[in-house]
Image 1 (cartoon, one colour):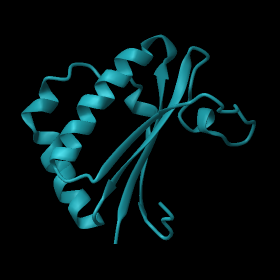
Image 2: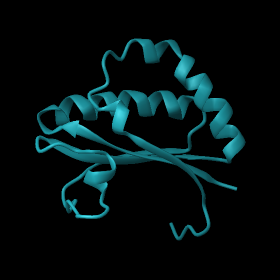
Image 3: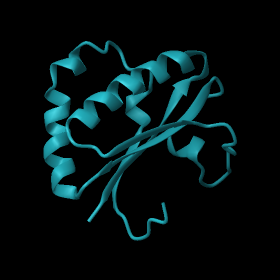
Image 4: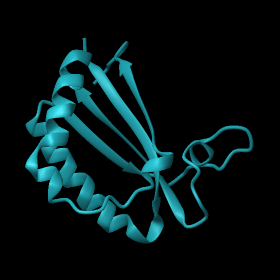
Length: 117
């Protein structure tokens, strides 16, 4: 059963191009290790909310933009095994500093229930 690893975080708005380039390099590594699809998105209409919202969840500051992405994998077991492999890939060491606040990122794994693509 297909498995989605989803994530969201806050990126300094001024570093959009740097984040996009970094995300593209990471996507190549995850695809090489078995992800069937990698999607990154830049928040354009992300309301702040008072009780709950994406900006609150990732503690986005006033000069930060919420990013959200996901990786599609054949199944959970593949994602767990291959993600570890990808993180050890030498290409990961060449990427430099990630332009995202890793302390406030959120991650979750999801089993696909419906896919109308």
